[in-house]
Each structure stands twice: as C-alpha cells, then as structure tokens.
Length: 75
Image (cartoon, rainbow, N blue to C red; front, side, top):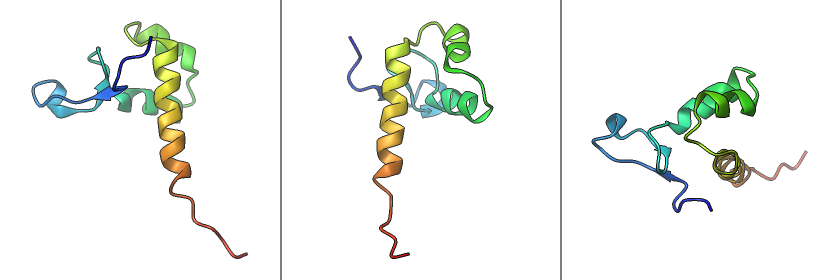
C-alpha cells in the first residue's frame, strides 16, 4: 500500500526538502541517482526505507508533470 501523499515536506525535517512520505529520504536523491545513470535497484538497496512501488509511483508523478508541460509544435 502506497502512502498518501507520495511526497511530503516538513519544515523541521531536512530543511523542508520534499521526501518520500514516511521516510527521511529526499526525492531529489532518486533524481540524482537516475541522472547519474544508476539503476533503480541501486537506489533501493542504498535506501531500504523506500519501496520499489513508492519509487516507481514518484517517478510516474514526475513523468506526468513533465508531459503536462508539453507544447504542441506546428513543425
């Protein structure tokens, strides 16, 4: 069961950095791993408090946010 919301912030936790809900793992860390070419499994091994389903759901949120910004091109 995934937490709702998937991402949360708290001013007293890591300076308000958005984290995976129920953990102290910043979402930025997952993005950094992906940008660095590391597999999802490596991130999950390094941060066992984040489940695979939770990480995939957060990546899906990011995908949806990016695609919602697409502009129709008249090429």
